[in-house]
Length: 134
Image (cartoon, rainbow, N blue to C red; front, side, top):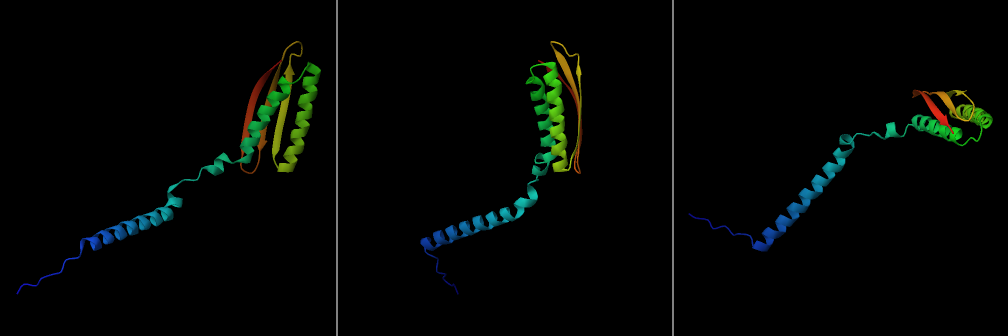
């Protein structure tokens, strides 16, 4: 006893294929969105550490203060003013900034030696550097 089965028309097979493909793509998309936060490491917290940005800025601006001075007397005055500014800034930000400098020898040219430290709850950064004037 042979049973004859009706076959689906070819247009129904095409519709089933399209609906299946779209469904699979949608499911994979949502699985990918669900897994994405756990697979991508977040390194932005390191890059956004304000203290390290401030530390680099202090070094850069100290160099600008030295290079922008016109005489040895002005160089000493400018560095002292910058140190006072840093102390006020550190108090506002709850940092401890140590800015110790010396100028050797003060004539037509000089070298400003700077010992810089920045201490906060997250960071303890130190640097010793020299800046040639003029």
